[in-house]
Each structure stands twice: as structure tokens, then as C-alpha cells.
Amino acid sequence: MVTVEVGPAGQRDSPGRLGAWIMAARPATLPAAVSPVVVGTALAAFHGVMEALPAAAALLGALLIQIATNLANDYFDHRKGGDSHDRVGPTRVVQAGLLAPRQVLNATLLVLGAAIVVGLYLVWVGGLPILIVGVVSLICAVAYTGGPFPLAYHGLGDLFVMVFFGFVAVAGTYWVQAGDLEPGVWLAGAGVGSLTTALLVVNNLRDIETDARAGKRTLAVRLGADGTRAEFVLLVLVTAAVPPIGVGFLEWPAWTLLALFGLGPALRTVDTVFHYRRPADLNRALGEVARGVTWYGGLLAVGFVLGSYL
Image (cartoon, rainbow, N blue to C red; front, side, top):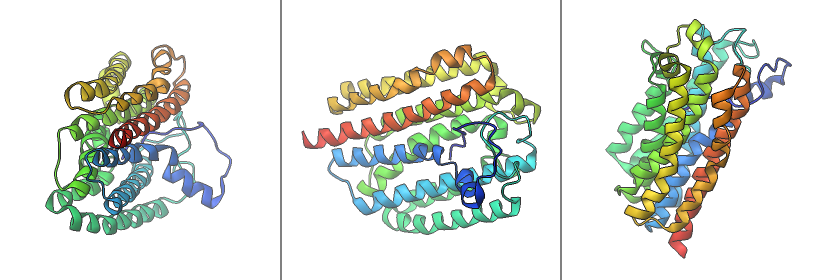
């Protein structure tokens, strides 16, 4: 449910109808939804409790909720004035006139409906805890930028991403396969969640001026540029600390230290975050951090899988 925007800014050529819908779904954000599910499944494999069908359903549900959040974000930001002609991120389909607001709203509801269908199976497998998580996730998919108290507009986006893309996603994925939890899910969730939140932090640092003018009080707007840079560094450090802590205190396989190599793309952005000249310069940094989310989650998962066989 993280709504960062990774890609070239300012593209105004018509992409065609299919291209507009793909743009609205924001495929570059989808690794943020995939990564915690993959890690949770790999951790289940390490403990010998992996179940393929619940894992696949968890992945599909996460993707659907992420896409619904992206569509809702496009619709509600346009309505609230969060998107304007001077924004420096990639094109928003409603603001650019590529899709009508009603079309995007209807698509949001359709994708949420599909997520509910998948969620019914997960509730059947995982019981009441998954029902609670599912309902809250669906509500937050809209409430991130919509409703009477949009989370992103009140500085709660960072906390929301950390909780749902870290702790809840990893723990929920593990739960539907194992039927219980173990301490490692919370540590793994902290690692994946921190790096995904760092992705949002760079996005909000880029948009700090336009968000402030639109009345969108993100945490970056509240902390200021220097405070946001410090938050970014702290999140990357937390992410880096997770595999060594897991190996040292939770008997994670040493292979999970491979995840540290996945931090390379994120580390390359630190200089840009501190010394960028124009907000648009951070678009490339966003791409690097997004790749870091993919590589970190993937290598952490590989480490668990290798540990289950070697």
C-alpha cells in the first residue's frame, strides 16, 4: 500500500488506453508488496511449515491491495488538490487527463472486490486474525489518501507503511501457512518494512514543497528536509542490522547475511539524498531504493531457503 512513484517525471505523451491503466497501477511499486510475502514464505520454508496455496493467495492479495491503493491515491489526490501541474513525479493519470476520475474510482472498487474474494480464502485458512488484518488493510487502502482522515495527509504514511509492509505482511504470510507465529517474523518484518518506508521517505522528500503547498502534511513536511534525511539514514541502518541480529540471536542461517548485499542500491542514494540540487534529482534515487527493496527481500528469502536445505 505504499504509493511512491518511481520512473521518469513529466512524461506527457499519450500512452494509449492500456498504457494509461498500467501507469495507474504503478508497476514499479509492486515489489514493495511482493517482498514481505516472499520473505514470510521463505521463513515458513526454513521452519518446515510452508504451504504453497496460502502463500500464493497471500501474494495475490497483497498485489491487489497495492494496486487498489495506487488507484485510490491517484483519484483522491486529484480531488484534494495534492496533484498539480508543478509536481515533479511521474504522470498521474487523472491529473493528466488520461483517465476520467470516475473510471479510476470504479477500477479501485473492482480491484478491492477481487482482493476481498482472495481474502475470503485466506480467512478460511487463517481464521479471525486474518479477518481482522484483511478488513483493516482494505479500509487503509482507501484511507491512505481518502476519507475524512487521510493517513498520508496527516503524517502517518511512514508508520502505516512500516506496520503493513513490514510486520503485518510478513507475519500474516507466515500465519496462513503455519497457523502460529515465531519471533523471527517480527525481526524480518522490521527489515523489509524499514527499507520500504525508506522508499516512501525519499518520495516524500522529493515532494516536500509541492505537498506543503497542497496542505498534504506528510512526515517529511513536518520534519523538514534535514529531519527527513536523518529518518532515511536511520531506516537504512535498521534494515542493515536485521540479518546480523537474526543470525546472532534467533539462529537464522548465515545465508541470510546475503541480504546485506541487497542494500547496495539504497546505499548509493545516500549522497543524492543529502546533496540533490533539484527535487527531480530524487527520481533516480527512488529507483535505486526500489531495487534495494527487491534485492534485499529476495536475498533474505534466498538465505532462508538455503538454510532449510543446507
